[in-house]
Image (cartoon, rainbow, N blue to C red; front, side, top):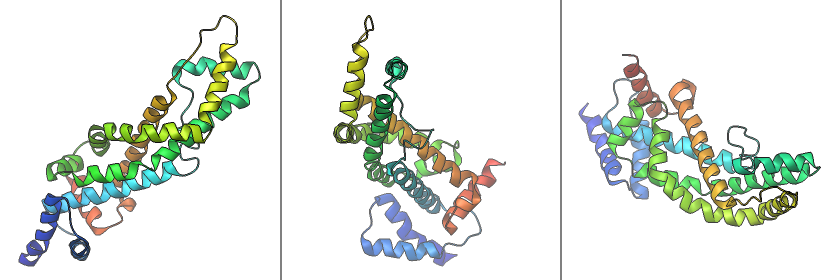
Length: 247
């Protein structure tokens, strides 16, 4: 027992300091392999377990959404015409410009997929800044506790990082042109009220919403699916959470 406590000291130190050199990280890797499966986890193990789970979940989420069709092929996060412009889409399809409407939707989602690549380092930074209290609250909190934490600490950073990437991507993938063409065709229709939408702001917001939806799904996997707990540490920490939630 004494040896285990001694082994946990470097873990606690690195957790509190939120930084470890390469040699220390290797040491942590060796220590993690020695964590016993039974018994209740220590506070250090809870912190490390939550961080490990969230790094896996956010990395998976960012990778999935940044892949081709990550947004476009996922109905839960697919970006459609802005609400105030849905009448534009309906009208364009009615008058034979359905392909133009399709091009707008495709290009909006391609821009979001492009921006999703920027999310991973922001999430990882938020995980590193997490305190032991944050980790414990997430572990024993609601099923969306981690997602709620990320919304609180990363939304402004994500918007700051996403918006310039989105602006560039919208031009690169042709969204700006397609949207301009769509709005132009619509605004030519007699008696309609001209539309104007800040595409960069809209797509950035929808891309961030999509990121949180994906992170929430990854969080649920580890909470609800024992098979998704791929390490001894995750099994121990989330097994402890399962027992406490049934009391």
